[in-house]
Image (cartoon, rainbow, N blue to C red; front, side, top):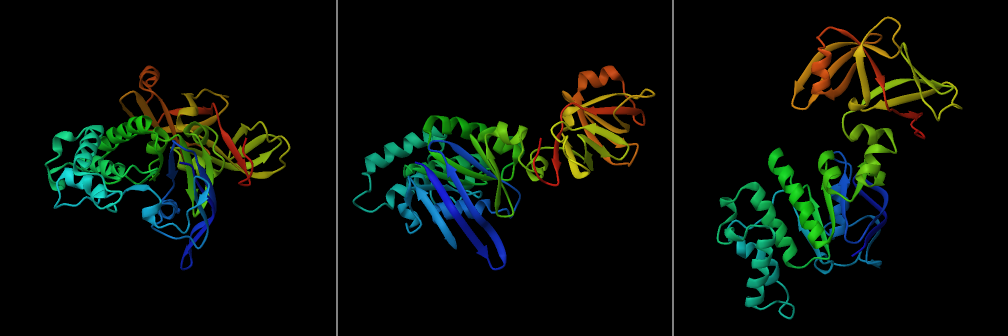
Length: 357
């Protein structure tokens, strides 16, 4: 099923939750709605489900206006953050619930229900827990059962609202890999809400970045991470260093530092900001006359394959974060308090919050 929303507006009192949002969700793909709390992503999901109504705009399911359709008529499966399982029902009965409450004319026979539930529990790899009750399960198991229950009614759309938000980091990582594999098997058009950048970039086919009720950027994980469309997107997706200054004739002047910014040769004394990822900085010992940003090493955290360096600029005391391999860090034998020089290998510049190189 294809999903589209056209010119969706939603306010709660004076708060603008969604500001004229239009989006297409491709059939069979997994789309992440990503952004900070309060950006409108859950409101949009609930409007698509029919659990919330927009002030204006349309929800289109397979090109047909579904705005007036009741939630039961939209063939949507919904998975909440906090499982929403019935504690007094076994795992089997929880998954069967949606089938048992169908109108009599559409309701499967008991044999069909048993077969369907067994298939779904095998799909989520929890068939051995059919007779248990939700309080006897771990958080990860409960979320997989909630997903099986949503799939039982054979939804044309699967909507997931922070599905792994209540779980610890290790279980989250395991479950998002499992969700990706499950989606590759089923190809149900799916939309999931998250504020976790790593989760969205790892799981989704398409990422929609939202901020204050607006869509900032839409693209594949690779596109939004490597070609951010706005300062918000760059700052939201992973760690980043910012260098504020003035751009003039293709050069950004930031304190005592001059950075070449190709593509902005025509800018004359414009306010600009350069964004540099920690892994896009070269770090070396300082020698007299060395070009680059002079810094002092304030702290090094070298555990595992990467070393994280906290560096203080000599000209304005701002902190810079750099990352290098632990092998290179050990080879350099850097000491805290030592003077170093860093050079951006790759930077991204926004001038007056406008076009980016």
